[in-house]
Length: 143
Ligand code: AMP
Image (tube, rainbow, N blue to C red; front, top):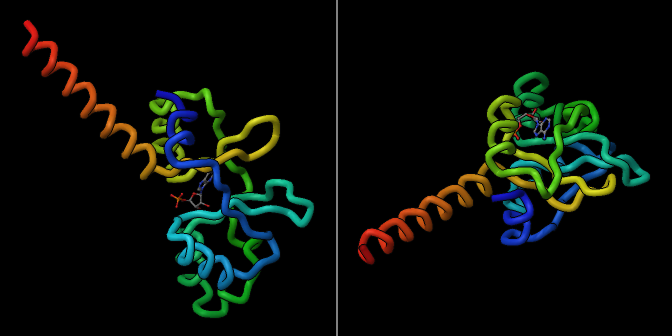
């Protein structure tokens, strides 16, 4: 199974925010879209970083409510690990496990064409396992 199979099922929507937006705006966007991370862009649209709900928790732990008025740029992760749509889902799982993050933007020709979360990966792995079990059962029943 490859990353493109996940994108085919979930779609290619990329929810992003400007690096000069506030953490409060980021929290509102995460909540309204029911997601855990935002791609952060510079004013010209270039990839600036990634901001996850964990970054907001860290910011509030450090600076209390004052953090909410600060810019996303102050708390985002700048070195973003990305993948391609022909990468394997197993490889992506390994990347998430070793990097200790749960979101990976998918890049094609310097453009972000989707974001895969650990939830998408788990969902794919479960349906793969169910399909394998079904075909094994059918094979045994046929014999
Ligand atoms: P997450 O587990 O995705 O909520 O993120 C945990 C931490 O890793 C946060 O500090 C994020 O900014 C950071 N992070 C999330 N995704 C990535 C990624 N693809 N590359 C690098 N850092 C990331």
